[in-house]
Picture (cartoon, rainbow, N blue to C red):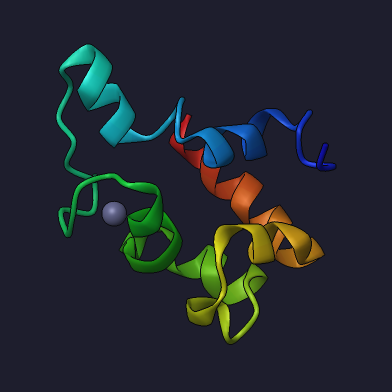
Length: 91
Ligand SMILES: [Zn+2]
């Protein structure tokens, strides 16, 4: 059992279900294109590529976040805060 299990926002990242457009597209037929227009709304797009979240990555993620995985970011207190903000923004 990991300590992120009970977190509503982090669970959505861990399961890939919920706010993400790629999930909404699969189950509800909505567009899978991200608002930024650069890519489809996958978790990796939001974490690493989405221009809408540039400020969150810059302010909360460690400088080497491109080399980190999702669990590494969740294990980093500031990274975890940034991840929650991203999911809140997508809801
Ligand atoms: Zn985007």
